[in-house]
Amino acid sequence: MSNPASAQRLLTLLEAQQQDAARMLEVLEEEFNALKGNDLQAFEQAMDSKLKHLGDLERKEQTSLPELEKIIGAPCNRQQLEAFIINSRDAQLLAAWQALHTILKQCHEQNLLNQRVLAASHAQVQQALNLLRGKDHQAPSSVTYQDSGKSEHRPALGQSIAIA
Image 1 (cartoon, rainbow, N blue to C red):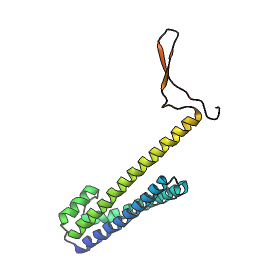
Image 2: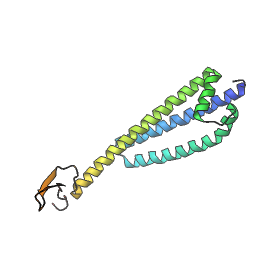
Image 3: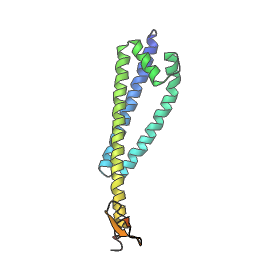
Image 4: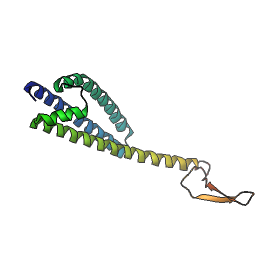
């Protein structure tokens, strides 16, 4: 990179993105703790915080994109920016780039974990509702016979707890 001022500005942008990503990781961890603890109020707060932070990130990305394009001298996407940083052979930029991607990977993994916990929780609630409604779809099917003598497989329907 021929311009030290551009290198410094790019480093500043990368460090700001690292801070934003670190904050997102904190929000995702708060979301996980709320899910794990079945704390609906904390979950709602974490979701609000997550959505606000995502909006802030999108706005920052839109405002920094023209500057990034000016620094690298071309339309900017992830691959072009990475190639530019690698070709710059600037140790600070490379370290900042790696640190950013480490945090982004942690965010991705935490988000996937949160989704799995949420899906498991949803499945448990759905199963409980099915039991309460007498619609246990996991119960073994009962075999009955039609008039023709052929078997007809039907799921065994439980009785609603409210009726029982």
